Amino acid sequence: MDWQSLTVVSSVISFGTLENLFPFFTFKESFDKRVYTNLVLGLINALTNSFTVALLLNWIWQQTLWFGIFHFINSPVLKIVLSFFLLDGYMYGWHRLMHTLPIAWRFHKVHHTELLMNTSTAYRFHPVEAILANLPKLFLIWLFGITLQNLLLYEVLLACELIFHHSNWAIPLKIDRYLSCFIVTPNYHRSHHSQLKKEATSNYASFFTIWDILFKSYNYPQSPKTIKLGLFPVKKELNLINLLKLPF
Ligand SMILES: [Zn+2]
Ligand SMILES: [Zn+2]
Image (tube, rainbow, N blue to C red; front, side):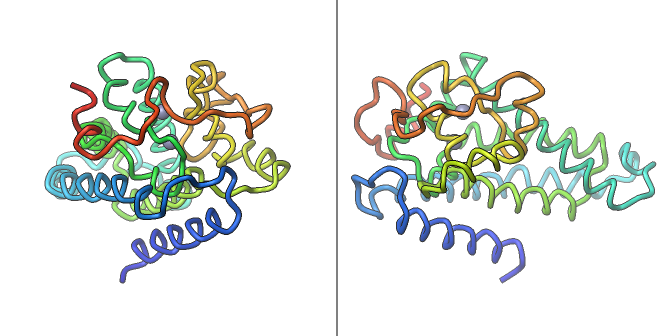
């Protein structure tokens, strides 16, 4: 197994175990019921992306006409840092757009129909959103000349962070609040999954919370235990077919 897969699998096992040992909200559904739909969606998304985005990426890295803006920077460390912040800033903008543009929200609301957030929610995205999210990113990769290594580093760490902040792990409130000054934490993201519009239209960050602080969408929940997760008026867990049909 390569280091990327090993890191992501380790995160799934670690945070999956922690959310079962120390749950924030009591799980009402069995393990297989709550992860099945999300993991199938994750699998569909991984397959469709490997036939589209991966091929386009390959083409970008093979062309020799333009090496990108980062080509003019000598320091490899600076290139890593800039690539990381550029990709993370893009993720913030994309996520905010998903909540602002009515047509985009139709697809993104699939992610918000989860009634009880857990590690597998990190994979709950409509395939249309999962592919479209990568297209402007491909342009950025070409424009700035982000390398395969730097892209992989961000994507792997982001995957671990998504698994972490979607987990139902009850981290002590003080630690969660402190960490949320830097990175997205479970309580911080729980608020984004709230049924209340005011809470759901804040905390758009994916990795670093600096974007929410800069663009005034930072909102740490006052009483995380009272958050009602999900999307009003969806009361029952939707099956795979209904989730795929939801935007139409
Ligand atoms: Zn969202
Ligand atoms: Zn989420």
